[in-house]
Image 1: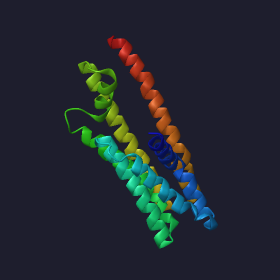
Image 2 (image 1 turned 120 degrees about the horizontal axis):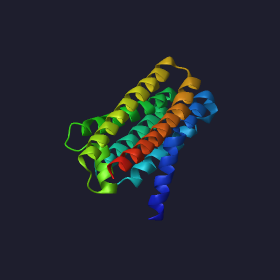
Image 3 (image 1 turned 180 degrees about the vertical axis):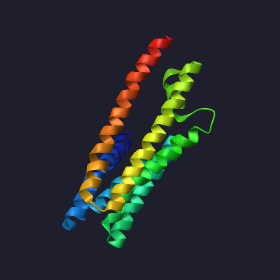
Image 4 (image 1 turned 90 degrees about the vertical axis):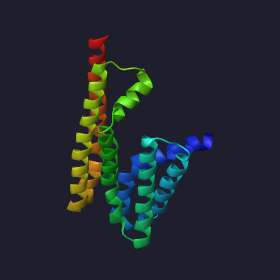
Length: 189
């Protein structure tokens, strides 16, 4: 159990630290030793997710696999620029996950809300569907900017967006949604 928890923490740190490790590996070629370490972190993350089921777990497994493949391909091809594409992959996978849930009876956010809250009133179902749509819009915008930073070829812009700005915007969206949710819950209680 402790080993699995450690694997989860290492994998999570790899995802968060990815932009900075990529920046270091590209900006300072002597630090290409980071590439095998990144690959190992993603393989460990994949191992930590082994046996987990569900759409969210499958998405996280796919992202861990993508991170490992990009890292290994970068080592094999001696081309660290491939690592820049991971945030684009993350946004595409998350958009697919959230967006496809809008085509089902229950959106992803509704499933998460029901897991935590139990039954939801019709207003809660509408609210969770709208939140899922907002997250889809976020992934479209964030993914587009991430793609632009890859194509622009400026590692400093890429790191600024993918290592800081996108995390800050995601945090603001989480916080803003939480505040709105509190107001909506008070209104219907």
